[in-house]
Amino acid sequence: MVFLIIILLIIGAVVYFKMSGDSKEVKKLYKDRTTEQKDVIRYFCSDGCFSKTISDAQYDELVRKKVDSLKLREKAINKIGLDESEIREIAPVNLEGYRFEKAYSKYGKDKLWRTSKYEVTWIFASGKQLYVYSYQFNMDEDGKRERTEEYFWKDITNFSTITETREVGIDWDSKKGEYKSRKNVDEQDFAIVVPGDKYICAAEVSENVERAIQGMKAKLREKKNG
Image (cartoon, rainbow, N blue to C red; front, side, top):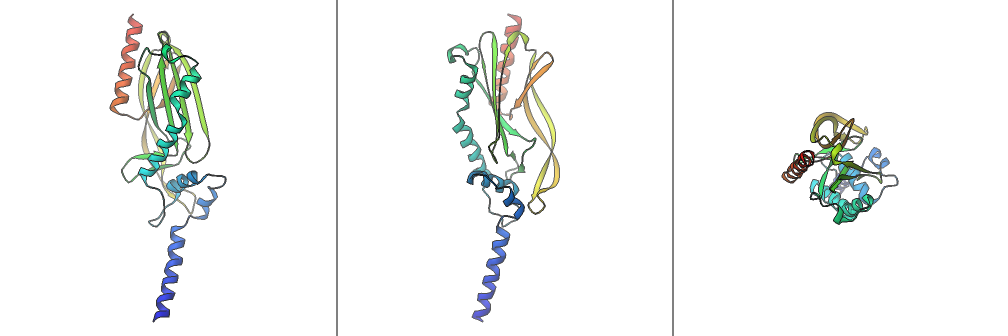
């Protein structure tokens, strides 16, 4: 009887280990990745009730820690090349949000979408110009993208918010290395409109964001009518 119990415990341990471990397909994604990046990949790509992944809240903490470590407000000012006293026409505007294109995506237990790609934008203004700096980074690898633009107030025709519906993957199949299904999700953007062009960046909707955008629109009207 004791021998049978031992055998059952061993079998149970082996089954649990196999079910809780990462699949070969997921392990392939770990190549040349840091411990934190592996946690991110596991968060998006492991499946099954026994998969050991970080929680939605822990992933949020990793993203926030990454954003804070980059010190993007200071980086933006350095890229613009002006003293902060020269860019006080409006209060600095900070826009942030996940990007869905070419990124892992996941619908959290809290019914919020998250992806492995995040974008932060800072907007400053002088009396004559608007300065925009965006920094986009990936949580699962070292990829990043920086962009800096300058616009004269007189050339800006509008500030607008855009909701774009994207089809994204949902429920990753770790064995096949692909998503099990697709789902439509609304991606929130902010746009600076100039003749023949638009500067588009991520902008998750919130009261602070709406207030900042309304303030920019009011300042634009003031510049146009002044």
